[in-house]
Image 1 (cartoon, helix red, strand yellow):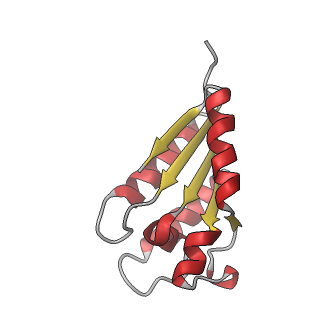
Image 2 (tube, rainbow, N blue to C red):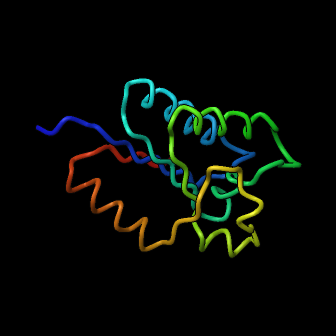
Amino acid sequence: MTKVQKVLLLLKNMVYESTSPQETLKFAKYYRSKGLQVLVILWGPMGVLLAKKDKTRGSPKYDDAVQECIDLGVEFRCCQLASDMIGLKKEELIPGIEFICSTDVAELFLTYREENQLIINF
């Protein structure tokens, strides 16, 4: 059996009306503290809102929590398609978060599955 070395966390649920963002960030920090490589994909029109810096609605501590994860070595990618749908521009992203296209996300699903790595959807 292959030992888990990488974790792919997917956040698609609404940022301000669910616990999913908090759970995603807590899981990311936990798995990173275990020495695992952690990649968070923010996708869907609601999930990508977590990538927006200086949010004017909801809890401002999200920006700090995301930055803390980035400082720990957690990687974040923001879905380009969903960002385009809501008009989120690259310069509006929290520094350290990059865009990713849908086909790259699809490829990640295959890669993580083939390598028997962990995928969690929030």
